[in-house]
Length: 101
Image (cartoon, rainbow, N blue to C red; front, side):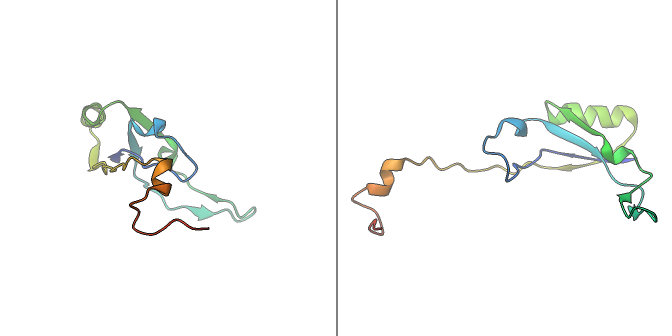
């Protein structure tokens, strides 16, 4: 089985960054999703895609995958540069563009 180890990105619905600290191990899909003939709902026989394991560190996730004999791929985390901002900067005298309504 193949698994993917990654650190999830912040979704558009989140304002905080609390749930982004853990590494996630997900199984790669092995079966195609198909529409049900009667209802039209999309489903699959692969139940492993519902499993999502969370680890504190990347090394713990790698150790789990190697212990179970899974082939894994790692997506490195993207470092976000946070620029500190202040509301007072909107009214600073040395702004590049004057603040107007």
